[in-house]
Each structure stands twice: as structure tokens, then as C-alpha cells.
Length: 246
Image 1 (cartoon, helix red, strand yellow):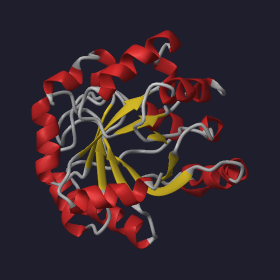
Image 2 (cartoon, one colour):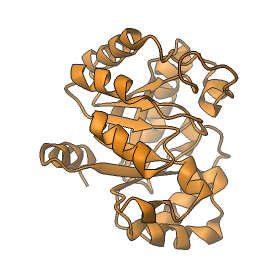
Image 3 (cartoon, rainbow, N blue to C red):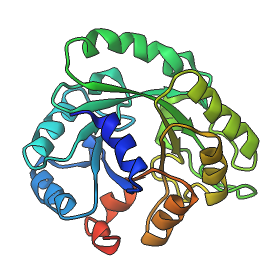
Image 4 (cartoon, rainbow, N blue to C red):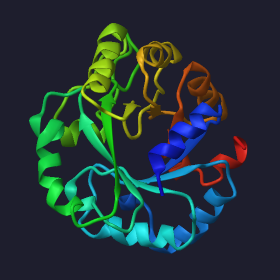
């Protein structure tokens, strides 16, 4: 399964890509079949599996259960090397280029190599950029799990040029994908203006996630330039979410 090839081919054909993010820590094993059945009946094109804080072995168990019930590509979205499993089809090899914690820029990746070498996973080098939870000028946003675990500060929404420069640096470093993320449980999606500015500078696919909770916000992300939109919390809270955006 050549995941990256199919992503680029779909984009070239003008197709919109949609991923649902399953957090193994929040998915009961006995619920997997029913949840995946709903996903299969929707317009979802990819299933991402992973979370910031997941006990070792849990991810593999959930991936196996999901794989038994779908033919969609399953891509790991790992918060740690312990979430690597050969049961998936691919892995977003995430470098948190918005932060300056060396562990999440390169350290964890070095640690992951010995595990990856024992798998057949398609490795997708991905520049991961965390954007602050609340829009510019708003106060009181809660800290996301990514911030807490990675011990990094997100990029400010009102400094669009810095976001664009960070994105472009990731591409120039050889990333195959860029992932703009407002963080798990974000209360506001990333503004279309930010997405558009980023898309205008990129020559690689753009993934956008975090805070997207309805059809209007999903459409806004696509219209602004997102190639692949990721839905996480909205689906966790409402398994019927995709019925409203088909």
C-alpha cells in the first residue's frame, strides 16, 4: 500500500481527503467494530491511530481490531515510540518543528529506528506544527496534551509569517507532509487565513486538524487549502459526526 503516492494522486485529481483520528486510550475494544462500521459507511479516506499518552501495547491491540473491520489505510499518529506496531500500514514520522525540544525534533526518531527496522510500515516524514489553541487576543485556552507531553510552546496565531516560515523550513528539510495542528481538544480550528497562507508557500500535501467540529468548519479548511482534514474529538463525542458531512 503506497499511502503517499495515493495521497498525491488524489490531490492531483482534486479529491478531498478526510481522516478520523482514533485515540487508543479513549477507544474501548468492544466498541471498535461498531465505530469502524460507521467510518466505512462515511467519506473517510484514512484512519489515523495514536495519542499523546497511551500505555504500551494498547495501540497495537486497537490497530489489530480496526484492521479486521476495514480496508482503509491505517496510519500511526504516535505520541511515543511505544506506539509503533507493524499491524498498521504506515506511520506519520512526526518532527515537532514548531517546538525546540530536541527529543521531539530528532531524539525520539533515533530511538524509533530500531523498532521501525523490524516493520514493513511506510514511513511518512511529517513536519508537525502546533498552533495555539485560541485565536489571537483570546485568553484562557486550556493546555493541549501535545503541549504538556512535548513541553513545547505552540506558535501564535497572530504571527502568520512565523508559521509560514516554519512550514517552509520543514519542506526544505525534506518533509513529505506538513501537519498543522491546533491540538487534541482544541476549542477553535485553525483560521482559514492561516491555512491559505501556508498552502500558498507549500509544494507538498497539507494536513489540518484540531478543533474542527462541524461541516462548516470542515468545508472552510478545504476551501482554504487543506488537502487532508483530520477529525478527532468531534468523532469521539459524536460517532454519527460523519453522517452530517457525507
